[in-house]
Length: 330
Image (tube, rainbow, N blue to C red; front, side):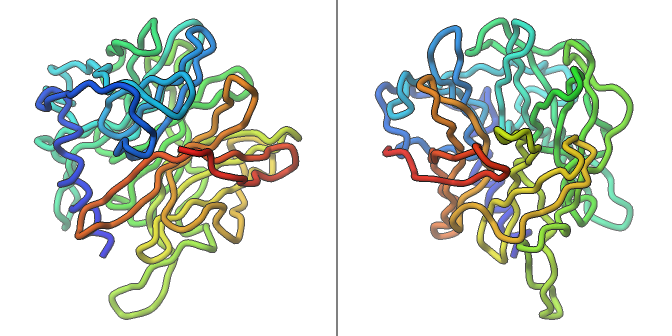
């Protein structure tokens, strides 16, 4: 079931992700619920006083109020002569301001390159990478290193975190390769132009007590998928991470907290998901009027096609745990 869903998702997303082969139709004053977008990430940019929303597909939307958006804009300019090729798929893009520049963390896929798996079908080459710009709306261009993670490792959904003044990339090692998806960290160079050393596993998909799937023999086991990690701190200083997996065929978001208060954990998974069924791949930002918001997408399977739309929920981080509140009107 999960493999079929992955194939259908790829077929649905491919026209959106081959960035230089699509026709972009610019629109204005579009309500949030009229935008089809997976993995929505919102940058509330203090300099321009605008909200910038991106995600899977590599396009960008702009808004003054989180209700109506102008776009989409093409902002990513990866190197066509790199391993990504001239028409990469782009998933789960994020824009992070850091030291007077803006960094575009995203997953790129070159369907023509393969990762060999002994005794199994090969995988399309997919990996996390970072582009840079002087502006929040790009253009985002390559930096020094041609790769951030090993070429033979299928990775996705990179995000950014700073710990003890060191920058880190947090990402998923994909379950289709390791059969039990992981969330990992790797240190980055001071200017984010590459990575330092090797990645370290923080936790595995099977650690979550709420994730589960049916096996071929009819038994129930933890789900294999790790998706969309995002690190945060509560107002009490507790380190947490939201991430997404599945409960059978239901897309579901949970949360884990670090016992040590650092990325190294150990990470303890909450027993139950934190959002309603069929919501996931969340991130957290603050509005210009001080509200703490979680952005994520709803998930519906309509006749074999995924329909995903951004949603915004108020959240409370005043205590030791993330508490999800009301949804913002769209």
